[in-house]
Amino acid sequence: MRNANNAQSTMHKAQINNAGAQCAPLQEIGNPNVGAHSVRPQTTNIANPHVGATCGRPQPMNIAQTADIPQTANIANDIHVGVDAHIDPQYTTILPAGGRAKHAPTKTADRQPPSLWKEMGSLLIKIAVIAIIATLLFTFFYGFHRNTDPDMFPMIKDGDLVLFYRLDKEYAIGDLLILNFQGERQARRVVARAGDIVDITEAGLIINGSIQQEFEIFGETPRYENGIEFPLTVREGQVFVLGDARKNATDSRVYGAVDTKDTYGTVITVIRRRHL
Image (cartoon, rainbow, N blue to C red; front, side, top):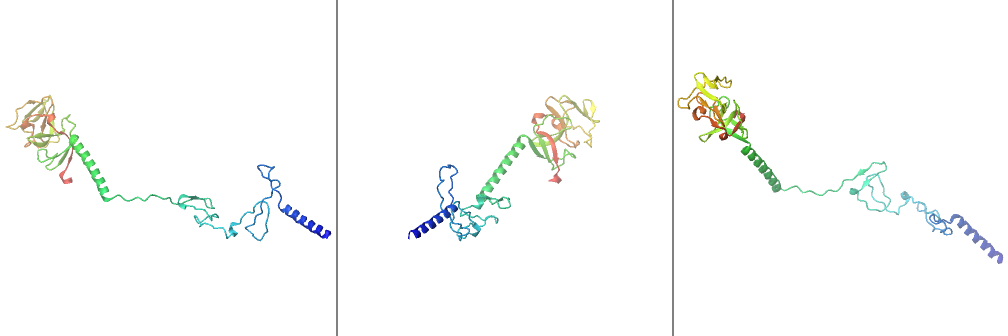
């Protein structure tokens, strides 16, 4: 009986020694004095459940062979996520196995198109601003005159639109200007300035004793019987003007020299009626 008990005790010790060979004591890296005689719990090889219990470090899991762990959907067609985590693809930059980043579209706030009344209001405001600017320009800087007489033919014809600059009243010989005579605007040509002596004889227009050669004029310059007296000296702040159609034009031969302060400005362009 004693020999049988000794044999069982010997077999039991051998099993313990074999287990000790498989489960070697592990030391804690942070503190070598702790855990020298402790043994970690046994783990199960999930990749191969037929392997028996093992001691020591846990064996890695083979996710491809594990059917009990849920997997998420295929993201970006390149990655299988092996954990049950919520990933919002619209806010995530995913790096697939090839190393190229795939950026999912970001969420943008829904923009409602502006209403018709709002667009019309904006358009009306723009039109009003443009109208105000145009009014200021053509009230203080520029002006239009529609010619209605033939006295400036052929330079300006009946019906032509004349654009003039209001701020330029320093007229030179040959300039065209806009003036007012008996409530009507006229376009006329400057032939003499302040200090000049003007005379009209059978020889033609004489300024300061010299007969004028006017290449823009195709007719003679007669003196009117019921007009002003010649010779005439142009006073300071005045100009002497004539129409290009010299035989019948109403100009300074009728009403004398013109004060520059009463004129509207210098003609800068003429728009022909056929171009309108």
